[in-house]
Length: 426
Image 1 (tube, rainbow, N blue to C red):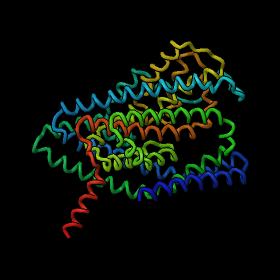
Image 2: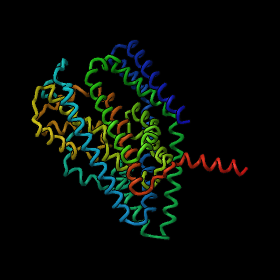
Image 3: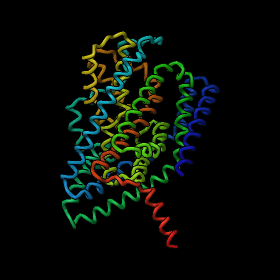
Image 4: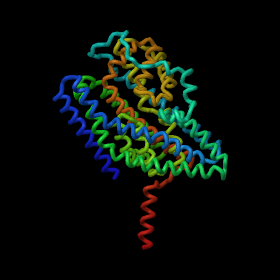
């Protein structure tokens, strides 16, 4: 089923490009193209809404069960510290890589595109990125509201409290833990139903983009896109290397297993779309449920490796496009600023652009430079989202190994052994 699903996604992407190109050529008028694209993207919108529908209860139930099974708050603190340590290190590497690659490749140095006026507005809200706004936002005023708006970080905070409280109840808490476990099982079944729609959603997502933008936009911004994706390839190699150092040869098995969520995130430009699939593949790889359900939700707010690399790459690219020279010290300061302002904005629409806009303002770079990349942001977001899948999968596996909760054979191998044993008995 796994290989077939991957094939369906790839075929859907190719057909989406073909259908989008046909629509773009048949209806060259931008307004007509936008209208057609809007109807095509209805399928993707429905799919992503179905994903959003299951994310909150899935995160809540799996995280509560995982923490309740940890037994005490000391274990939660220990695992949380290890997880955040890995996330912090990965974020630094990703930001630094983006900085190094943009300085080596200089994508904005010989830009032949007309620069937007420095005073042009981008209509992006950037005021919500201050530390004063962020810290209270982490704590939910209402868990119902947090679930209704899919605020992953707020759901995580409440789930940690709920899981620790259930563990503290001892025997009294077992029934609650069982209910949460049954809820998680139900949500995974629903996930299976929703995922059947994935290839159709991928087709619609790609077709809608190409209908409005045309394949030509890739040619116009070809250099920038190729150089950014080259940066992502280097990042993938670094993540794989880190995985190999920590997990040995099994790291390649893990990367092979997450190809489905990787392609799903890439084609829909949504990390959320891949969440249930990552959870499933990590379980099959041998990561314990309590570790996977703890690390992954945190990763969606604190371990966006692709987004980190893009923030530094795009920020310096815009400075290069305007001919603004930034000394090394200023660039490193910008990197640290991005490290802080990028946390916890995963649920913000066009989060990367919002973070970059806030950073440009602080370093006197015209915010209008964002208009240079806004047209192709969807294509770039595809790579960022897919990279986040790799980063979070490796992080969960590594933390599981540190905790001694990584099955050396994996669930798939264990199932095969059980089948062989039954066959032998027969």
